[in-house]
Amino acid sequence: MTAISVNSSDNLFGHPKGLYVCFATELWERFSFYGMKYLLLLYLTKYHLFSDGAGLEILGSYAGLVYALPVIGGVLADRYLGMRKAVLFGGILLCLGHLLMAYEGHQAIQYDAGTILQSAITLTDGSVLAAGTQLQETIKIQDVAALNVFYFALALIVTGVGFLKPNISTIVGQLYPEGDPRRDSGFTIFYMGINVGSFFATIICGYLGETYGWGYGFGAAGIGMLVGLVTFIRGQKYLHGLAEPTNPEVLEEKVGGFIKKEHLIYLASIASLSVIWLMVQHEPFVFMAQQTLLVIAGIGLLAYSLLKGTREEFHRMIVLVILIASTIIFWALFEQSAGSMTLYADRVVDREFNGFEITASQFGSLNAGFIMMLSLPIAALWVWLEKFKLNPNTPVKFGLGIIQVGLGFGALVVGVQYPNEAGQISMWWLVLAYLLHTTGELCLSPVGLSAVTKLAVHRVVGMAMGTWFLATALAETVAMRLGKMAAIDTASADTGDIASIISTYTELFQFLMYVGIGVGIFMIAISPILKKGMHGVK
Image (cartoon, rainbow, N blue to C red; front, side, top):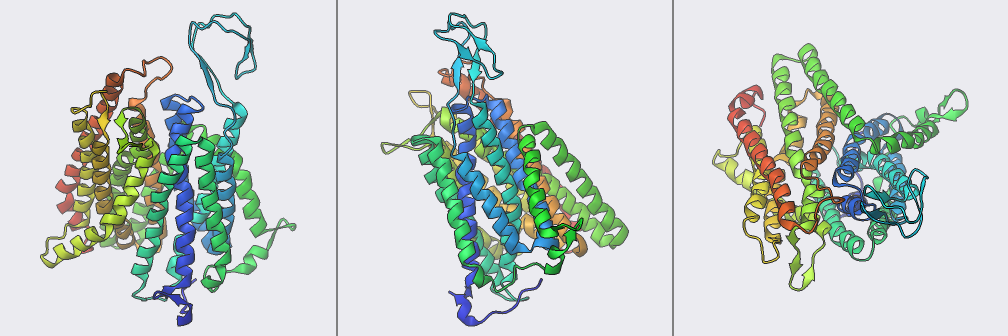
């Protein structure tokens, strides 16, 4: 469906009013998403007493699925539902998922090895240990029912994001006629909503969750999503039919003679929740599926450009596949923020500031805050450098971005050499790490999305964009696998030995520093070859 022009009276501050509807919807959706993301690992390890490794596996499965399913949601909207219905359905699932997250159940209890039970306890498998029993090993009693609700909530959120995330962005593009010079600034305003939502979510939900109770933090995220859904419903009139199905009659067709296609899509999506519920709990299956799909997608893109495209198009596609592969390294390092870096902030960082204690999850707001501060200056920097023919090409920018995320971990490696009297690390080293990660992101992410549209063969640009997000999904899972290198066994380790904990994290951060800097330098070294393969695309 193509965009149509609307009456100037439907504009606000020079842009269609529908833009602000999408802005607010996306703001609150990101508020709910990031509000729970940075609480997730802390909640699992501190409330349900998951080991670091088990908690990271859940986070990796969840994050990996969140970035993979929008590929399917976008296809269903394009071919059948239309963007408006997809966003509404996704928003409903998200509200249900986030509000279910507010149910905590009973806090897990740990009995250390050697403990003599004062009363009988019932284990997770239903067996009973009598009073007076001396435990031979450490055991944990977890609320299995609450955890199953938790996994179902994650399944709802994953599916909801799959429907909402790709289609709310597409609606923004439809609001502007072809060639409208306001389109780029419209997307700038829209993406600012993402960062505003992320910034305030991690501050508000992180504070509520860690200070007053996990349910308050997750509940606040759910209320935010509900506000976003209501905003979208009330603002539908400003979309002027641009987000409707291309062929609405197809949705009315009956499958098997008794159920409409539209209803079948909804029912199939609801039925898929059981599959996602299982996948969230089995990270190896998610990891294997991601690798398989990404390899198939990469080979498919290359094969199509070789068989159907020109020689130049094939070369460009090779370059694009290499760039996409390099993003797996970048995002695998960058996404330590919700994993190992959050646990690091919780366990060893001095979080006191002017008499106020910053919660570990609130550090996640730094990325969004720095993006809001630096995105326009860095964009202007590229324009200024272009005047002097010094603007780095795309592969060099990728290399610079990966180097900077490595240097961010370098800041943490340096910071451990300057502990305070209690052996804790100053929070300013963590702030510096987030700053370097954000400048790296601004070098790579916007440039990368643009590169996909420019380098891919036009007829498969949608598949190329899907491959980009599949790579991001795989990176999320890889990130948590890397984070497990610093997993601390809180059941047996002396958690009071802060020096030992710092040493464990430093080994991981040092490894990530070398990987980031090394891969970044490699990308810059091969950039002349990649530039030649781009055949003039900038």
